[in-house]
Image (cartoon, rainbow, N blue to C red):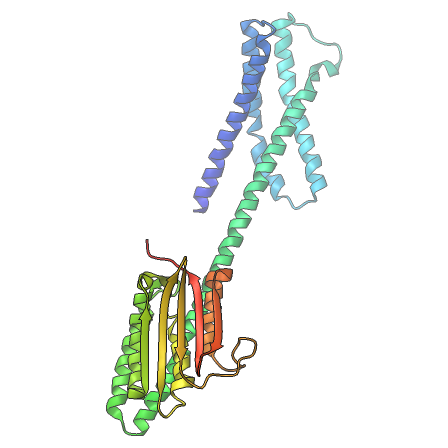
Amino acid sequence: MKYQMLVGSKYQFYLVNLAGWAGYISSRLLGTIYWDKTASYYWFITFGGIFAFLLSFSLRPIYLKIWAWEANTAKKIILVLGICYLLSIIWVVPMNLLFWDIFKQGYRPGGWYGYISDNGGKFYLYFCWSCLYFGIKFYREMQKATQSALKANSLAHEAQLKMLRYQLNPHFLFNTLNAISTLILIKQNDRANEMVARLSNFLRDSLDNDPMQKVTLKQEINTLQLYLGIEKVRFDERLEVKFDIGKNAEEALIPSLILQPLVENSIKYAIANSETGGTIKICANIERRYLLLLIEDNGPGVKLNGGSLPSGRGVGIKNTQGRLKELYGEEHTFSITNAQPSGLRIAIQIPYEVSQ
């Protein structure tokens, strides 16, 4: 890739340089038509332009070294001006000699200044060439820096999402393994074995999903059903889950495993702490260009602090909030309220997307 970038830059230089000098030669030729010059003068102009074009190739390796030179800007500018002046001399002296031989019948000026007459225009041309070269070079470096910054931000963003996504597994495993341990201690080995089997199915399904890829709501619900199958072993009839999925909502794309920690929070605080259990309701609807998700339980609820859960509670909810913020920024809403007559309600609004 680096070699390809260097090659591309090299050929781009050749093309731009050729186009620039071709434009210069053309403008000079067009400018002399008005004066009705001879054919030899047109050849003289063409030869001078080609000679200057070939000289310009010597600037590129020199300027690459100046660009990498660790010196202040003033020194670099002075050096570039000196190089432009030297190259203009190399251009103008042989062109003057040729001009005198062809058009002045071998006339030679008496003083040294005559050999470098018309040097100002040549110097100005190479100076403009140098400004254009460094301008393009600076622009390309800025582009590379911008691309590097964007790539670094993208990698950091991806790492953050993966970290948040993989944090779910240890948190969930801790609770599930505790439940399995409890079942073993109370000699309910069959139920413990069933929970281990369902845990294996759930983890296999969740690990197969790329944390950076979105899944359809239908796929997310299927994964959620695997998780609920584990919890059904623990709570049996005490746990009831109701789904209300609106038309077209099943095809909406959402981050993988975004519902599981929210449902897990309801099970932990609404179902596990109640002798009679409880109900969790999961709703999804499309409104305009947004997908609305609602997770509600009929537990005791909680005293909220400015719309947030108390400190130390709801690790999975805070994790989910972090993932949604990383993915959608200001394009999403996440609210926690107490349901009526009791319970906790979590409402999520994200942009409605479907697979192409």
